[in-house]
Image (cartoon, rainbow over all chains, first blue to last red; front, side, top):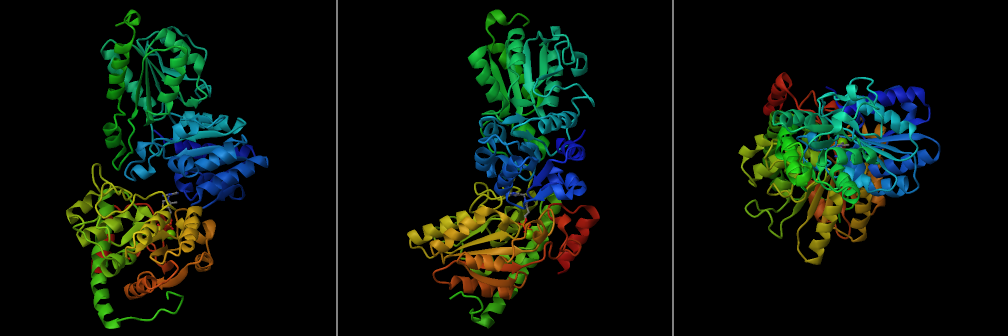
Length: 335
Length: 287
Ligand SMILES: Cc1ncc(C[n+]2csc(CCOP(=O)(O)OP(=O)(O)O)c2C)c(N)n1
Ligand SMILES: [Mg+2]
């Protein structure tokens, strides 16, 4: 168990030691986004802009244009909302190499309530041309995608969480950033057994469950619920909401023919939106989305909120049953 | 004229009785704020405690409001732009009778109308939803403009943090307020010198703050933000201003009233627990 923002803070320090061109920007939240670790070790390469997110994003653009590799951090609501136009106009339009690493995404922010719960950030960032959008599931995946982002040339948005999350990937797991990871196949084999080029026979299932962020581990629980009912599923971690791993989606469409998506975000415009858009144009098949149904959040404990908004293993299982029932009858072979 | 230093002292004796009552309210509010945040297990004690006198003075000594009819069109408006000080606003609204005090311990709990940051849809007496810093003054400008348009006599009061003044939107609003000669608008700045990452002047120095507001066309008053008499004086000064909005820079102590929180940045966004909570409650109860 570890929060993804913690893994981010640690990885930034490693990157800072390796690459002098890495600079870090924050907007008075460095102790929450964990950029404070970098600030402590590299004070001359850390810039606190105060409570001024728009200015921070603009300055990040200027730093990138001058050969630096800026990581700009604040809460996800402010990174994607308060500074949206600066991200679009100053960073993405000229294609500058800025990494926006936003913490406290989603409902699990908890008691601070709706003003602080980003449920639209993935949609907002995904719609910007050229922006890569990543939602890692755990600490290990965070480490790897942050390193990937530092090496990638172009704007990237990485969404992190406040609360500790269970480990999905073992340390050093051969994740291929950009590719969807099969974290549990129909035969119950985990990521390690599958490997990057692993055997594909476990991908023949009744339904494919795609998830990112905190929902990946909930979907692993849903796998068990479904298995007990004789429904086979594949749980896939789709950290890269953009660009999507289209090849894997097509393969799963052919092998499973029905999908569930699950994310700590609005059902509009995020992972569910991206997957339905792609499949409806290329391999139409049922997709049932688990996410927040066009609502603002509210105060509560993370668990209370996840239950209230239907982000639970049981709701994922229910969505899987619905996806199966929507499958064309001739494809419901395993039912 | 609410020009610097030209403020005359008004009806001193009547005032001090009022001030005595407000000080009683402040003691009550402070107790409730500590108890609420303690019960919630999270929240922002530092910035809530620094503005107790400001908010209590406005509601109990300055503003015309009607708790029976929170949307009374002629009411004076209060905008808590630094929304994380919600516990203070809630405690004052409850004291004023907008909703039962029994609700206070539900702060930040699932299903409570008392959200972590003010929610205008859920809480009677809360004018607008805030929490994302830097936006309140613009909404106050809109309300002041509407008051002028409708020829209503109400006044609009906003409260901002000193760190919050780093947001560019604050200065866009400041410019608009003087451009439109909004003398029915005043903004308190809770000048406690701290934000989350450290001292305001070290993180992103906004000083000279008074000169900035003046340069944006505002009348500026500087007061001790824990001195109720001075706050009453400043508010009446602002109310008499003609042709320009007034900024009241209130020098405060973050965490005021709880010795171990005073001036300590780590108490910005952390709830006291166990022994700390009992000590805090004892200190604010004794005051
Ligand atoms: C736009 C925005 N950015 C960041 C935050 C997170 N945040 C909450 S309180 C705070 C510090 C506020 O400092 P200040 O305005 O001085 O308030 P006070 O000291 O009175 O608590 C920050 C950065 C926020 N709520 N809104
Ligand atoms: Mg402050």
